Image (cartoon, rainbow, N blue to C red; front, side, top):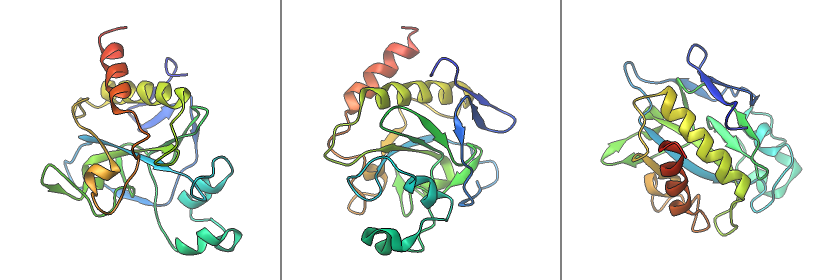
Length: 192
């Protein structure tokens, strides 16, 4: 899948992946380019995988009464640029040129409002549940494609949601293997 993936720099959408466009985005500030990748973990309801719930949340059509947890997030307006499911399938919700609503109140290296200058990537998962091989492979491929499309990005500027919103967010959690991601990126970027 990763070999066929490419960013169309006209539309800022990925080719070869499912598109479910979210209404929850706005324009980046003038002259601001994506400079940071923020890795998240998401599951709806918490700890449960599969189902239509992420799509429905990010498109504003989650049936709040369908599960008790949904009442706790009722009215939430959130999105990410891309979600990577447990089987490695990608869905894009917001063009990379736009500002997705994924990081909330956040700061990276003393710079606030991370949504302004970041791309949000959600992995379907939970803090304590290991992410899948398929997810690491898809994430590595996606990061390589994004680095090629956006020279403003760098493999040195990849952070977890917990890094940009410490004390408020814990994802992608201790189950996420940062060494595995960084090693895979080094190999791929070196042409391996």
